[in-house]
Length: 315
Length: 315
Image (cartoon, rainbow over all chains, first blue to last red; front, side):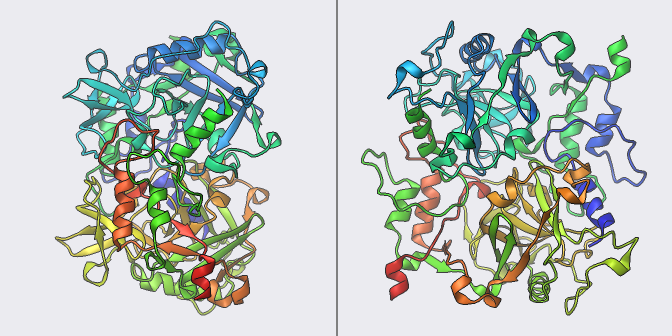
């Protein structure tokens, strides 16, 4: 009942999702390497800096959400999203949906079928794109996870994204985990453009894998989306515009002055350090754990994020 | 981009979590039975009414959260929680933690190690309990899920709760899915009493299975917990009392006048209807889906909840 007890539970369970890596020294008593130990022992080459040309800043009244786009998985959609961002397409539009244990979603709230003249123009962006549910596996690096997965023949990490892969059809796809960003569509597979985007805020809806085009992942600021009030309309849509969360702007990081960018590094997923991190999650070494299950699910591996350490930046 | 398009995505993806079953008629075009078809075709015997002796009402300023307790999995903890509720232990205490993609947690915010005299007294409840991480499997019904699971030799549903089972050690346990309620503890296995409770609000943290005592499941009102602002202290703890969400009361439903109870039925998990529901999730029949994966994870099967239909109640 005490706060110390609560705090201990907190420490044992921390880093459930992606978060800025903590740099506090690890406590003395240990049964093996914890995730924090692995992070603390990492070197500069275990990290990569986000590419500003493929990083989106979603600016809300509550602050910035940073999204890493995945051009290797959905090149046409990502290019279109970048064109929309450069054209300020989303500035002043809104988050129109928050469905509990599922997604938030944003786009143009105008009913464009009834009032097409009022819809936000696409500018230089494409109005029609092919579906990009999967990508050729040969073009994608893949650090395979040894653990069984019911949703895909193989799972692992590709360029820092959780992914599935099918060796029979030689395709790979960005998996629907917490924080994954996808392109909303109608029933027709080729009805997405990237103008409507959703972010997974609940239990990984892996049934959507290979059924929709996924375009990236939130790497910072998830809590600005996941804690939004749930919409009370069908599917978690808000029923009235005064319930919307307005989008101040969605900007490509490369379009933002360098001093105003968010300095972020993401842990590489193709290193020995990464393998050690996965192992620290597969069999938890924290003193809190008494039963080691020797398993980890694709969507239960947090991909650490940090600000560039000062001594690295000085080099 | 249109609202109709957004709405279609919504319909195709709806019911991601547990929610009140909708009774709207199903649309005409179908590839097979959707979950809504299964619910619509269910009969009174496919549902069970919550037992008020094992149902908790967590009363917040935002409304009521309904928790079904699982005495078959953790008899000592559940009995203690019921004693604490009868003694009004939690009334005026607080939700002290909300960690993104993990849990919310409530209890006595007093630092009882430093100020034991200020701690809320336990009354008739036990201050020390044995760990109840697992229960004898022979005492528990089990509708096994055919699908592979990396966290447990067998998974399925027992008395309406998602569960794991190990035939080698003949034990079963209530699994950590979205909405699962567990008893916070210190590092010692027997350091939980049920006075501090947490609810899973993110990706299922199945690594906690068999490592902590789970006591029940939220069956209604999850959005009153999952959308709470995230705590900015370590482990998602709030840093200041003015950030807490205060608990008006936690009451056993049987202690509440009948007219003030929440009328809820939960779909039974041991019927042919249940098997049909699982199949409708394993291979989605909505027009939205083009790729049928032929798999479902334990924590991705929503357990439908409804108010007792008027014609049933009249019988």
